Length: 142
Image 1 (cartoon, rainbow, N blue to C red):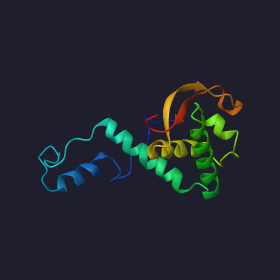
Image 2 (image 1 turned 135 degrees about the vertical axis):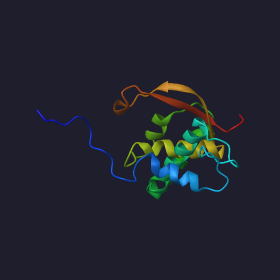
Image 3 (image 1 turned 180 degrees about the vertical axis):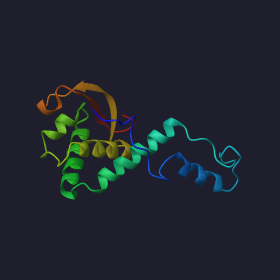
Image 4 (image 1 turned 30 degrees about the vertical axis):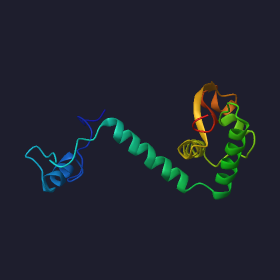
């Protein structure tokens, strides 16, 4: 049994005081460290920014050939104007090197107006263990 009473302390300059010092040095700051010129960041805005950053990062290091296959399969299914899910796209093309690649392609298609979400369905692929996934349909305003 060890005599340790808790976790080891953080190294100097790695805790919250590092960020507090940066806030104080910013122009137009109050004594509480908040900037006069900017509105407070909401949790929703921060979540959206982190989502977009990680999707862009995932999309940037995706194989260009697989990306074009996924985009064409999504375009094809969208043109049929029937609801479809990632399972339907996966039946048409090879699997990506990592499952997170699917989300980036669907997100790009929604933003481009190629597809729109219309509901949810349980996955039929064994690797997804009947997980919930989005249903999509072609076009943003159909």
